[in-house]
Image 1 (spheres, rainbow, N blue to C red):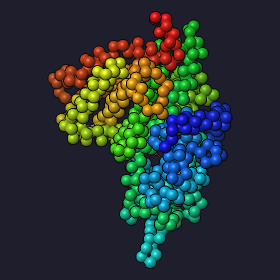
Image 2 (image 1 turned 180 degrees about the horizontal axis):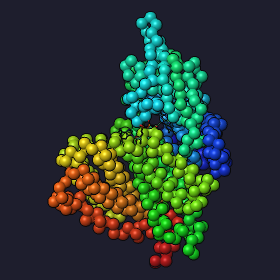
Image 3 (image 1 turned 45 degrees about the vertical axis):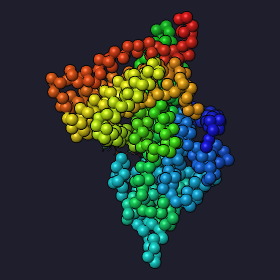
Image 4 (image 1 turned 45 degrees about the horizontal axis):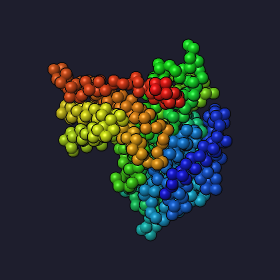
Length: 559
Ligand SMILES: Cc1cc2nc3c(=O)[nH]c(=O)nc-3n(C[C@H](O)[C@H](O)[C@H](O)COP(=O)(O)OP(=O)(O)OC[C@H]3O[C@@H](n4cnc5c(N)ncnc54)[C@H](O)[C@@H]3O)c2cc1C
């Protein structure tokens, strides 16, 4: 267990270290040279130095026993520093996940202790040239070596593609097809027949080493098969998706915020048409505030999911991990893109860093499951809930937010409820007209579900903050009033998106006759959703004032 104080201290050491060793000019130079700072990565992972990996290793193996919430906080901070270095450090978390989930007690003791004590770097070898989103298509094989009727080892052959830390790891978890099915093996660097290519020349995260691996009859002893039973690989990979996707979600969050935290101060100094850009609504209300709202909605979902995973009562929460990843990484990308615009010509140059952040954060919608795969995962799971509850699932959720609104009238819970009711209606119409036979509709539903659930999550977070009941490790950048305003901004956006885009897809797929459209618009609650936009500009004004530290002055002036 890590206390809130220890977590704060760890995050502070991380920040201090980065300030000293990874200032902007160093990051730019490494990015230019396309070079992974291996020595710095080792420093961050060494137990006698920063020892970041100790956070996630259980205490019984020499670590600090951090939970998912702690890992989210560290991942966000790492991403704020540099997403390439974050990927290099966190690849050890990812690479050792199959060990956490599937290893025997002896294997756990061996590998997790070595990570804690020796600062071993791991890589996670799942993707192949022909098997990306569909891992079931993997071709790497693990052929048993049998002596006296007993399997004493395996010979692994195949290729792995785009493996983070591929050229610098000390050990690799490799997914390969054994006779009983896909299975994870630990392969150490330097063993005969195991090679890696030169690092890839990438669009972004150029400070992380990404390399292809080749395995040519690589022999591993039988005790390198994780869990000691073949055929568990895909189940083991699935079992940690909730957790690993949350890490990448935190990367998106940290990347997006690091871009905005450059755009915000920049805009206070850049004078155009006689005043700083920060005082121009057409600038802040387009480029800054909506991105803040999306990022904070995603943060709420990440924090709630992390708490639920740490409570260990609900399984791996894969769908929730997918929603968090989808929303945070898309929001991170959009925020970085808007930050380039916010810096104008300077934003387009290397020196101001936002273009590098944009290139870096781009990967987060691709690795650990693409956004489209997230949409599919979300939609399929929630579709089952819709069917099982005979269409009531989201109506029931909406009622919870109506009740929350009765207790907290200003956190946007009433608007989140409108989004959820509309979602239930869209899904029901899709069921009746059998619209999910169109893959595009299925995936678009995934997006709408993610928006509606995040609107609810943010309203809940704003209420918890108001009640003084927010997790003590939770981010507290915004106070009660500001978070409530951010929540209302996001909820309006989500409700409108769900109802209008949902309606569009239903009509577009021929799911409704012309004569029935007007009635359906009413059952979606569109008039109420339109009315709920009232107050939007003043909320955007207020959030901008908070971001630019002028909210108190404005309130004083009003009084
Ligand atoms: C820098 C980097 C680091 C990486 N690190 C690692 C690592 O450490 N370990 C590891 O194992 N892998 C790693 N990967 C691989 C990464 O996880 C895959 O690239 C990712 O899962 C997508 O697979 P793919 O590239 O084969 O794309 P594809 O699966 O071929 O997808 C291409 C496009 O098609 C879409 N698509 C795919 N399937 C469907 C479908 N059924 N319906 C609709 N659309 C679909 C995708 O969303 C995407 O837009 C890394 C990749 C990169 C670029």
